[in-house]
Length: 400
Ligand code: CUA
Image 1 (spheres, rainbow, N blue to C red):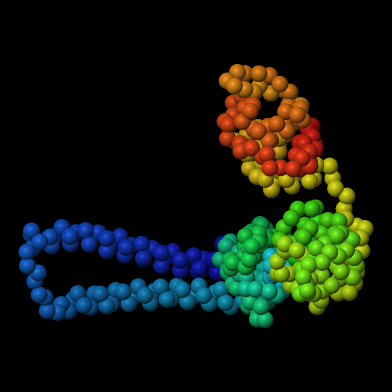
Image 2 (spheres, rainbow, N blue to C red):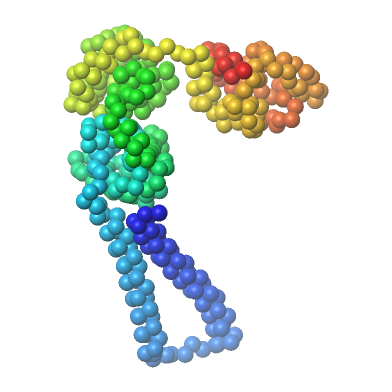
C-alpha cells in the first residue's frame, strides 16, 4: 500500500469513525433522556442559566475533531495532488465510450500499461462530454473535461491488474466504459513499450478502429450496438435521413468517407446523431486503410462465433456454462447429442439431445424438463430461425 493510499484511507476511516461514534452517542443519549425527563418523572422543565463547563466542552471538543478531520483531509488531498517531479507521463483521452492512453514514445493503447513501483501522472482530457477517470484501487477519481486538462497521479505498486471505470454518466454505454491498469515488472513493461503496436495478429484496420473508439459503438461481427454494424458495410443499401427527407444510398467509398469525417450530415435511419466527426482525428492514411478493410478485409467468421454472441446477448450463459461447470441449467459443454433423462407430463423419458430436441427446448423449454433441474427457463420463441441455427452451430463447437 502506498503512502497516498494510506493517507486517503486514514482520512476516510477517521471521518467515518468519528461520525459513527457520534451517531451512536447521540442515539444513546436521546434514548436515555426520553426516559429520564419523561413528564411522569419530570413534570416541569427547569430553566438553566449558563454553564461554563458544558459550554467549553461543546465548543472545544468539536473544534478539535473538526480540525483533525481537516488535517487528515488536507494531507490526503495534498498527497493526491502533488505528483512527484519524476513521474512517468501518460496522456489520456476519454471519449464515448473508451479510454485511449498515449505514452511518451507515441505508442497508444486502450488499456493502461505501467511499470511497477513507479509514480505515473496522467494528463487527461475528453473529446466529447465529461467523463470521470476512476481507479478505486489507487483511490483516484477525476473528471475529464472537453477543452480542459486535468490530471491524476498514483504510485503503481506491485505488478497487478486493476479496474478503470467511468464515474460520470456519459450516455447509453456509460457502464461499458471500462478498462484496466496493467502493472508490469519493469523489464516486461520495457519490452511492451518498445514493441511496435499491434502485437496481436489482427488487421491493422482493427487496431485503428480500436484506438479511435469505433468498436465501442460499431461491431464488426454483425451485432447491433449504438451504431450500425461495420460487418458487410461496404456497398450496403442504407436508408439515410437528410434535411430533405429519407433516401436510400449505397454505402460506397465516398459515402463512408463522408460518414466518418462528418457523420452528422446524413444519419442512418433509426440511429441517433451522436457520433463525433473524425475529420481531424483520423489521418488520410488511416482512413484509407479503414475503407480498404471495409471493402475486402472483414475477417472470416469462425464457426459458432455468431451463436456465441447470441448466447451471451440473450443471457443464456448466465444460467448455462460453456465449460462443463454446473450453474442453474445444464452446461452447453458436450450438450449436443448427449443422452438426457427428461420429464414430460410427470413421466421420465430418455432421449437424445439432437438438434430437434435442442430447438424445442429453446423455443418451449417447459415441455421437457431435464431431470434434476427446475422449470425456470423462459421460452425464447422470439428468436429468428437463423439465430437458433447459429446457436445450434455454436453448441456443436462445444463438443469435445
Ligand atoms: Cu464516460 Cu461515463
